[in-house]
Structures are given as C-alpha cells and as structure tokens.
Image (cartoon, rainbow, N blue to C red):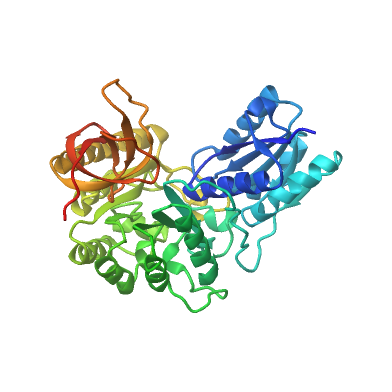
Length: 445
C-alpha cells in the first residue's frame, strides 16, 4: 500500500510558513509523503487575511487546486478559514476540513481521519483559552539553517485597521519550558540561528496563561542555550517595547543587530486614528534608545499609505519619518478595509489612485535608502550563515547564498564545499540592488 501524498500551499506571514512546515513534519510522522499538487491525496491550504482581497485569493487558489487535482481532499486553515468558516465547505465541496488559527494543531490527525471516513467533514474554529501547544515533530527532521519558534499566538491591541485579533484571537503565551525545549531541539539538529515568532512578542507572558517569564527574560534564557549563534524576534509593538528589552540589545551578544519595528504612519494624527498607542516623538525616542544600546542596529518597518482621511500633509509626515528613523528597508501597502475593524466604517476613504501614487513615492524613497544601506556594507567584514546554493551560478566556482547578522541576503563565492548551516567569515565585495556579493576571508584570531 503506497504512502498517501500531501501538498502544502501557504500564504502570508512567517508564522503561517512555520505552521505549514509543522503540518508537513506531522504528516510525515503519520506516514504521508510530500509530493506535487497533481499527485496529492490531501492538500493543505494555509491562508492569510492581512493583504488586499484575501477571500478572493483563497477562492481562486481553491479553483486552481480543483483544476489540477479534483480528487484530492482539501483542508483550509489560517486567518481566512477563521473568517469564512464552514462556508468554505459549502462553496467548495472538495474542502472537507477548515481550521482556524488555534485549530491547526488538529489538522494532521484530521487528515488521517478524513481519508478513512470519505463522508466526514471537520471544522476546528473555536479559540482556545490557552496556547495550543504541540509536539514540534522534529524526530529525524533535517534542521534548516534558520529555525523559527512560535512563542505566542493572538493579539489584544485591536488597531483600527487590523483583523488579527479577530482571526488569531486573544493573546496566549506558550510556556517558557516548551519554548526552550523546542529551541534546544533545533540547536541539537544544527540550527545556529533562531527567530522567535508572535503577533506581539513584547506581550509574551503578560496574559493569564503566562508563567512569570517576561519577554526580555525569555530572550536571555534562549540566548543562554549552548550552541546558539544568532537570535532574532518578530514582531514587536513599539508601544510595548520595554527598557529591559532595549538593555538586552546591549547585553546579549547573540541578539542580532536587526529589528523589525512597525511604524505604520509617520503622522501623529493618523497614528491616533489607527489606535497605535504612540506618537512619533515616542517612536523616535525608542529608536534613539536602541541605537544608544546597540550602535550597529538596523531597522526595518511596515507602512500603510492612504489610511482613511490621510491628507497630503499627513502622508508627507510618513516620508519624513522614513528619513528620520533611518529605515534600511520597509514593507509598504495601500490601506484596504477588513471586515469588522473600526477603520472599515471610517469616512473619507482615500481614492485608490491616490493611494497608489503615494505608495510609489514612499517605495521610491525607501529604495534609495536601501541602496545606500547596501553600498555602505561594501568593504566590511562580517559572517554569513549559508542557507543554500545560489540560483545565480555562473561557472566560476560554487556560489552560495545566506544571511549576515543584519539579515541582508549575501552571495558568497566559496573556495571549499559549502553546506546549509555553515558560518563563513567574509568580506563584502560589492552591492547589487537587493543583495551583496562577498568572498571568504580567514577567521581573525
């Protein structure tokens, strides 16, 4: 009897990617084999509702799945599944499983049951009172160069534009012991770079399920694990970024000098309408504290343009903020309504053509800043964690790609065989538009 085949399709954030990778490992443990979409017995579609027109994208993806493999059993999970629920099964008969954010833990066993019960349909849409912890299913798994570890789920901030509190539920912290156990397991398998994940990592331990460990305490505990070379975290909320976490940047050597700190708007009036809980003075003071603690820190951010009522003057404040904060990169998007959010009922929606024009301007400014950042790296010595052979092979010796401590993509021409997870000291030779080219150098004594 052949192994049942599975295929995963993932939209959205790194937490979704991490959830899908866990589902894949859990299915392999249950005797499944990963395969092409056309050959799969079960298809797992993990969805995101943050970007524009998420429901349409999911319906389109389900249409493509049906066209490619009409016999497959399909499970839909994630934020759009939480929103649309069992209506997905009514509209798409091929869908026999829906699971919200907390229900993903039930997906692997559900697929096994559904294969054995052809008439059954299952849904897991309730939010749980505590973090839905799970066996990481690492036994025999080959560690990637970079490992991601969920530390919490959900958010209580209810920013005016954001649907996450509705689709991910209230914040729930994972136990410190469970986080440390998973981090140790990844390190034992060769991962030297770990990223801690959560919708608002600063709030770790502050909910009713917390075990007394705060986020800066967790950072220090993970950083102390033997064998860990790099530690990162996403996503922090500027309002909740504590002085203790800033001190950790100065005192914990394995914490990488790269932080993603979502700003969303550079206008105080827009920030107030968004309900972000800080103004630009507070945000820039935090940036200054970070740079005082860690002078080499580099910042990236998220920006929303065309929020309801945004004037040209308010947008100009965002352009000024990009320069004032010195972002080395940013992810910028046009505002779009999300059902049930406060912003969806706000008046004075900015016309889409105005949004697009503003988006082009902020992205052009950020592109110039990003290019300047990469050029400033030329001539510097750093260390690159190799992830995979580069797709840009040119016949002049093996070219590998990886990341430096600042998260920059670096292509390294090796003189010896490479492997994922290898740390290589390099000198940055040149900058391309979105990446760096480097050569190995002898390690300093």
